[in-house]
Image (cartoon, rainbow, N blue to C red):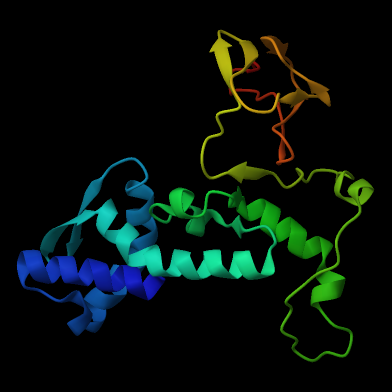
Length: 225
């Protein structure tokens, strides 16, 4: 997928500047180095001006989305055949049009990934010392996943696309959950059908998806939000 993105960007430079950044080692490396920042910029805009080797080209988000489409199709076919839940790390979650092509995918933070690796280290690191290709891990019981490690926040899966089940209105320091459409959201396990004030440590869950916990944030001046 990274190579497909690089080819699409190089083709844009060739069309606009007649310069192929892949023909020089330095500019080819710079192209790959700038990919994460470019994908991040395109999250909030339809195009971005990119510089390589002293040349500038306009890179359109739709162009990169098109270059990823065949990969999205392969992932979708695998999910249809094998089932399972697709989780995206921070880098993959910034891919163009990923939410449209893989709407069921969930975003996980780097901290959640590293914490999960720590939890499953005994299954990942085999006792015989050999290198194994790990394709599956044992499921954790509900009581295990609910156990918090002191000083380590629990992994939180964030939806790639914003849900439409409800909305949260913020007025000053007051947060209010308002149901919109679809299954009723739950706060601390209770279905909510009308506007409901929220408080710190409330747990919000949409349908059978992931849950979110509201946490207070203390600013530099000591105030809490």
